[in-house]
Image 1 (spheres, rainbow, N blue to C red):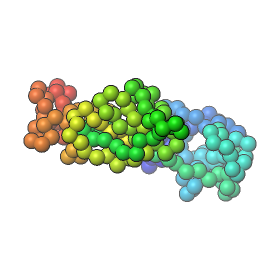
Image 2 (image 1 turned 180 degrees about the horizontal axis):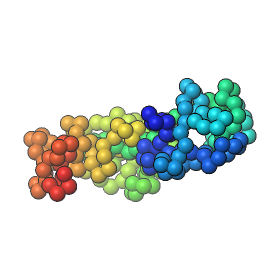
Image 3 (image 1 turned 180 degrees about the vertical axis):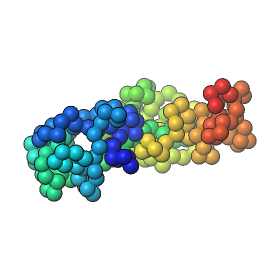
Amino acid sequence: ITTNGYIQDSVTEMCLTVEQDVNNMGIRFAECKDAKTWQSLGSAFRLNEGNGKCWHPVGGSDNPEEDTNVVIYDGCDSDRTTFTMKPTLCWEEYAESKLFGKIKTDTGRKLRSRRFSTAKNMCMETEGCNGLHYNGKTYLLCRSDDTKSTSETTNKAFVMKPCGDTCESGTMRCADEKCRESCDGDDSGECPSATTRCNDGVCRHEHMC
């Protein structure tokens, strides 16, 4: 929730809102300039207008099922109005790194995919999966999120972290913990050929700084 009262998704930059201040009105995402603002009451969220309705699960259950839609409704002091915000997760790429704890099926086969997008979806749907290890050919699902350096330049590790803690899109985490487009030349501190270090510490082509 921002200082102005908007509840904003860090990835899409869209904000949660409702069309009208009426009971059972569904909460949805919209452009922040068109969104309504909210007040955090600790574990409840109250609309900053009208009668001050709060978030409720559809149906009013104190123990709603997963993926139950959220609406606004009168009342802000019952168990059903308790909500917890979870941080949006992004994939952090670590160069020349690996992960341990490969996840296997009941028959002993390692869960893997040659496609990054498929492997990411598999990991998010598999209990206990916290990252991916790329060995140069396939992406393997792993239980560990503790990356280890390796001399194999084709090896990479991918770990899910809150988006605010990850490198910008198009960069990766290098051995010195800096985010760069390429980790070549880490030992000398020099950027790869034909690139320069920008003010944010990332190596890019000069016109992209």
